[in-house]
Length: 111
Image (cartoon, rainbow, N blue to C red; front, side, top):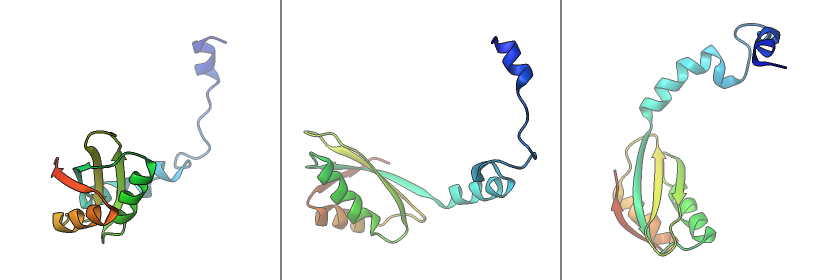
């Protein structure tokens, strides 16, 4: 079947507002507000070498009040990048204490 034939056979979804939750009008009105409330900072953390290290750091940082997600880019043998998203600005002393509690060292805040 050619691209032209495929395009002719496409049918719109039943109901213009149907679809997944992220495509609904309600979602569109909530997304900008949620994005505006979120803050994310990236930190460099030393000493992480494996998935257990990643899990430990994620667990400690996720326990901080307001944290919505923790993403880790593991770089064994170098400083790993840890991005923490939160509903409000993070207290760097608490981030440092959480990373230390997991057994690692916070080197620097990237942004």
